[in-house]
Length: 80
Image 1 (cartoon, rainbow, N blue to C red):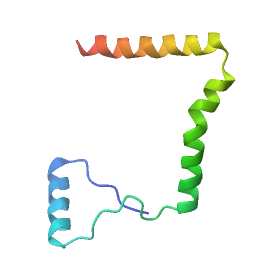
Image 2: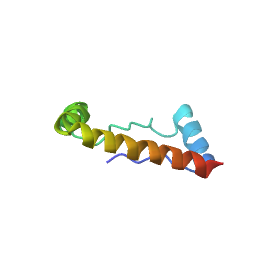
Image 3: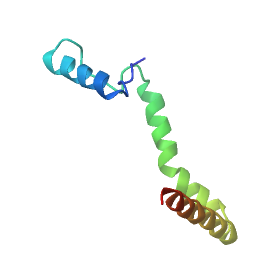
């Protein structure tokens, strides 16, 4: 399984310098993943939203859109 890059800016900077100088191997986010599983997940992800929307009634889609808009506006109000 691949190791995630550090979130701390100083640790990340050191890691990038080590990778650039060859002290440490390059970061590969796909390392350790099964290509078959990745392809299958992507295939489902590409059709998921459209398939879900096709199953919803017009009223359900409208209610979902209203909830989404309310959440976006609530987030914007909390920033102010």
